[in-house]
Image (tube, rainbow, N blue to C red; front, side, top):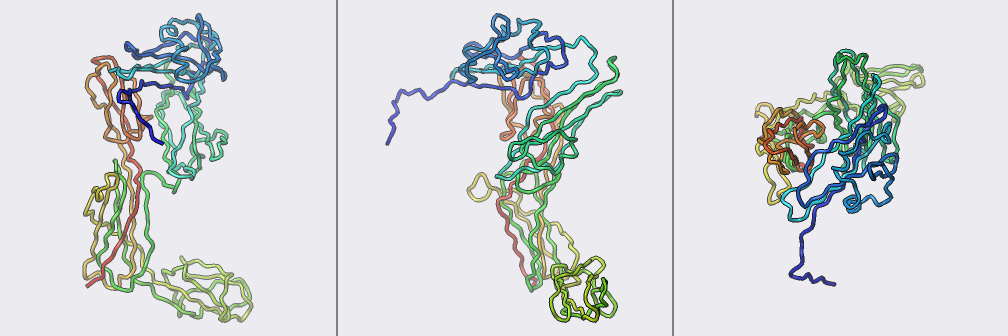
Length: 482
């Protein structure tokens, strides 16, 4: 089957968007809802309309009265039937919203040839005519990203607050598991190392006085979590190769890592050289006395050190013994055998300690062949000839570091009054972005979109954390000493 497209076919499409708030306007604990505040732009030919979700129902204002709306919740319906900004800003004393949680819904439209797009920022003015010393706020539900079917694991979770006087903030979190079930709220420290597909926070703000001497502000909550594959704590992850012997003296080691583009993150490599361990084969370590006893691993009353527990074998009258305990730190085994049983042992010992030598970065994040999405980093290290004797065992370690920092009060120039976009040089933490404009941020592309009144001096601040490294493959090679 084939399709024939007419030459005069119009390939252009209008732009539409339907925005549904995840965090409600919270009028619980308030006894006055004064009205709405709406900012933004509605250029000629564009459109923006509003509905609300309250107690599970869609609400539209008809002649100033909140009325249940029975139409579909889709962008075209909201654009056709929703309230205008002028209708909403004209409202005063909305008693039906007192004590409620209100989720705004915004529909936006622009024709395909529009040079500018509509924007909207909506707020709800509320007041409590009674003294309020405590305010409880629930956040939106935040999904934790994963790269496979595994469940992300939270490696750390912390909050930053600003308190004065006797002000305080109690912060709890609840977790959604892989089956979609939510836990009870818990302190932040109890969520560390827990698996979760999403999180939600509950903040309780407290003051003892209302004269301005007490205040409580939550600045940010930071969650570090893995992408569902391995548990990574903090900003550093490490990968180790298997320790392996090569039966020749080693000198030069090289490592080649294929990876995705690095943004505020680095890869460093280290190599470890060791001598082969010594070996004991069925040495006599004692004779059982019929009780629970500890026997030393060694000869002539001198214990061996550096015992490899993976090679330890114990024999009773020449037969392998499976039921025994050991402590290689003190070089002892514990047995309970019939009196007179001869006990022997086989094991490797005298194993070198790991000494990690930093490798030189020969090639730093260079495009790999013709693949624009793949980069290569190469490392090299060579032992001095005088240090190669008996260095026949080796392995390497990759250290993945994500740097962090803050951009403070960066000038973006004056606003044009139209929608503007810039690509941030760092991977910004969205919750930390401070910009005196209406803005949105795409964490994948680092694109910051914003609009403000013309000639407004724009100032930007944000925290950033290096993007997670994505290792595609790595190869290691050694050359023998000459």
